[in-house]
Each structure stands twice: as structure tokens, then as C-alpha cells.
Length: 135
Image (cartoon, rainbow, N blue to C red; front, side, top):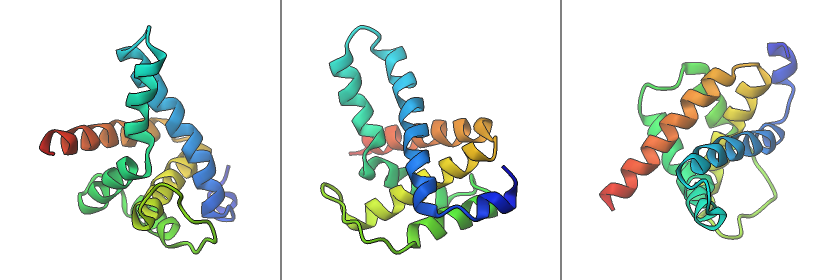
């Protein structure tokens, strides 16, 4: 898709796609660790795909220099997008940050930048794992 076509897509729709893209990446990563135990795999995957986990990653990505200016702007735009949905099991601030993170991944996927999606996902895994070591 062209940059112009991508700019016309609602950030909520980008997050919808980004959620699926990230879920597949997480499941692939988890299954390499737990190839024979779907129950353990699911338990570990939730750790990465939860709004809380994604928000941790988004905060760190925004605070550092890992994202480009355009990526940062998109994440923030999606985070700030007004929505009528309310999170059921997440802090509203975490939910908005997670939505921004997912929208960024959805945008990059549609732009054909799956290499960058993978880089961001790997950095998110590192951030989430490091945050858990501290707790």
C-alpha cells in the first residue's frame, strides 16, 4: 500500500490488524520454548499480548530512541484516538498505549515492513522480560 492509502486507514483498524500480527509473532516465539505444551504456551503468550505487557513495551519504546519519528508519531496518534470501547480487564491508560503499539505494527505490516515489525516485536519481548526480572 502507498503511504497515502495507509494514512487513510483509521488507527483503530490498524490496531485490529496489528493485534493479529503481534499475536502470531508471539505464538511462534513461545512455541519454540514450549513445543509440546499448549497450556504453558498460552500462559506465557498472555504475558506478552496483554495490554499491560504491550503498554510496558510502548512506554519504553517511546522513552528511548528505538522508534523513528514517524513511528513515534503514529503510536502517539493511535494512543490518543478517541474510542467508545472500554477495556474490561486493563487499566485504561495501558489499553490506550497497547492500542498505539498494535496500530504501529499493523501500519508497518501493511506497508510491507515486516522486517521492522519483527525488530519492534523482539525489542518488546526484551523490554517485557527485563521488566519482569525487576519485579
